[in-house]
Image 1 (cartoon, rainbow, N blue to C red):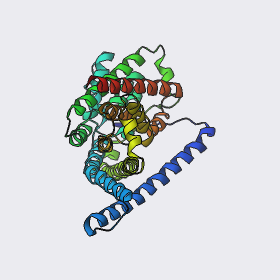
Image 2 (cartoon, rainbow, N blue to C red):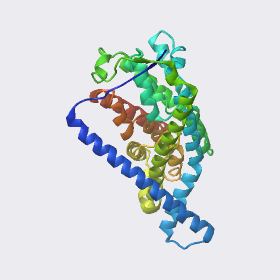
Image 3 (cartoon, rainbow, N blue to C red):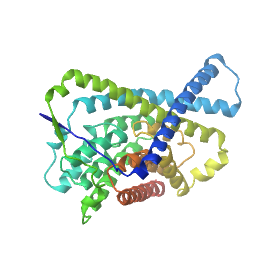
Image 4 (cartoon, rainbow, N blue to C red):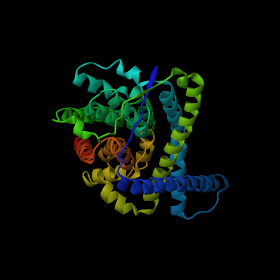
Length: 350
């Protein structure tokens, strides 16, 4: 017998309409991003292959957009394949069997289990909910949620490839994510009533189903479905991020970028805000950050690569189905302060 879990979010009717509007808006943005990506690729190739004349700024915009998409798309495909395989064929029981008994040991192990579940932050939320349903503490599930998007092989590879000119970014990103996740998990572990961090009724008891529902054919079909969903989600977010990066580099005056990007403090604050807004997947955000390597400080890029995968708009909306608003505000604030501290430390130490 294999357990499958059913979850429910907040049932307040007052929250249903805004959530539907947000979903519809996000879907429309993704469709627009795909359409714009097709246009950018077409015009970019037309300029490069057929030497079609374009205004200088527009030419820079399409060239930068195309370069980001071409560099990152193979990793999007790889990430989608791995995410589909893991979610379809690997059970959470595999991870639960290796967890130590002590809370500290569980958090330390959970913070590196992204190597078992190498999916983006969107795919980690359902896994965290499953862990809560199996009896883990909220502080342990949050440690997993914060660390897993960064401490996995796909994010490691993309960061390694994007920052070939300075591989210390890989060490800063991986080490910083491990420290932030475990520090916040340790703080929340000392919360007097951890159950108050979770939305009442968000985690429901498991229903038991027969094994035939999890036969190989079912899992294979599930894998194909997950692969398509994951690729669509990741590539559209990559497209949005590519437009933002290329647009800011092409149309914002260079003097403005240099005045903000070269400042050791303002550059970090600007990239933290950008990370929250663009909501890129951790598997491809290194290529987005690479577009700013010539104008923004190294610490600002490090802060962006730490904060974005942990806390952004889409992640908060997903986490809101499980964690209370006060808990999310606390977690987001701690992630922001820790990422800011690391970014400033990098700027002033290097």
